[in-house]
Image (cartoon, rainbow, N blue to C red; front, top):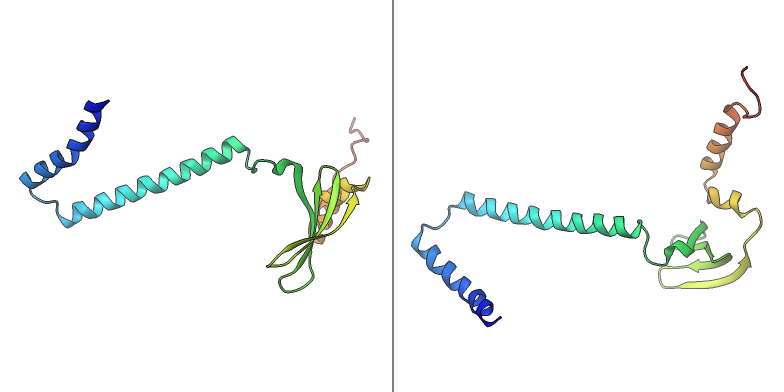
Length: 142
C-alpha cells in the first residue's frame, strides 16, 4: 500500500523530467489533446445518462406511482394540474413560486378514457378518426 502511494507521488515528477527532455508539443498537438479530452468527457456524460435511463426505465424512483392526468393554463404562468397518485386524483395549483393542493378527488371509473389523451383535443380527434377509418374487427372477409 505504501509502495503504491510512493509510486503515485513520483509519477508527476517523472513526467516533468521526461517532458523537459523532449521538445514541447506544438499548438496543433495541444489543440488535439484538448479536443480529445473534451470528447472523452462528453462521451462519459452521455454514457452515464444512457446507463441511468436504461437502469431506471426512464423514470425517477417512485415516479411510477405518480402520473400527470391533465393540465390547464389559467394565467400567463399559472396552471391547474390533475395528478394521479395511488388511485386518487390531486388537483394542484401551480405557480412559479409554489405548488398548492386545491382538492382531492377519487379516481373516476371512466378515467381510462380521460387519461389516454390528457387535454389535447387534436389528439382525441385523431384517435377517433383513426378508429373510424379502421374496419370493424367483427366483420370477416371470407
